[in-house]
Each structure stands twice: as C-alpha cells, then as structure tokens.
Image 1 (cartoon, rainbow, N blue to C red):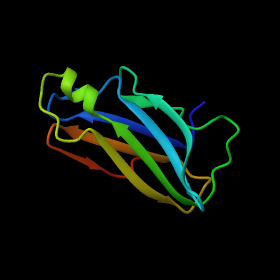
Image 2 (cartoon, one colour):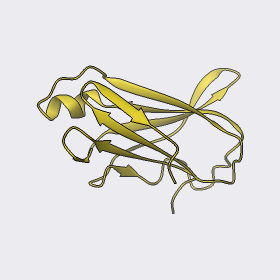
Image 3 (cartoon, rainbow, N blue to C red):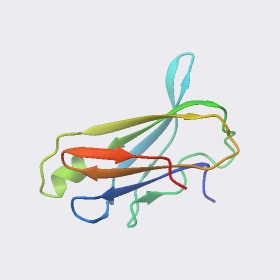
Image 4 (spheres, rainbow, N blue to C red):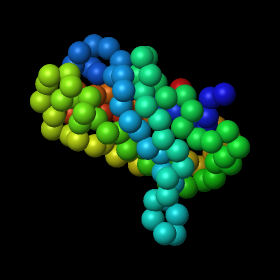
Length: 114
C-alpha cells in the first residue's frame, strides 16, 4: 500500500532514476524533528512506503533527507551535496504528497508532484 508521502529521485545528469539512495522522513515536533520512517530508492528511483501503514498524518512541517553522497560518488562523478534535506508543509493530511528530487552532481530541484 502506498503511503500518503512518497518520493522519486531522478539523476538528471545521467538521464535515469537514481537507485539505492537512502531517505529519511521526519516530522517537526516541540522537541525538534522526529523520525517517522525511512526507505531506499528502488530500480525506478521511487519509495512508495515511507510511513508505517497505520500512521495518521497530521498538519505540520515534514522533512525528507536524501543521502545522495554515496550514490553520486559511486556514479563516478563529483559530489557537492552529501545530504539534501527538503522541508515541506502539510495542511491537508488526507491528500497524497509526492516530493520528487531532480538530482545532478552540482545542483538539485524539487516540486510537489502528483
């Protein structure tokens, strides 16, 4: 079952999905960020299940942290970013939130996907 928060990493320099990138999902609380789940991108660069099945999503600030350094170094290229944190806001917890990462050795971009 797909969780309400998903991601997809595309290596735009190489022109294919980025496989094997570890990603951590956290939620901001009064005590700072707390880990909710984690996963590793599959052969299509996707992680469909970041949240536990019974997790109840709440409005608030969330963070996905992509550990891209090992992937970029293994690809034989340079690595300017070791980790990429993306913070985003959820106001409607019943909606699906897809947060893609478009990655290159010297830059990245993201957006709210569908």
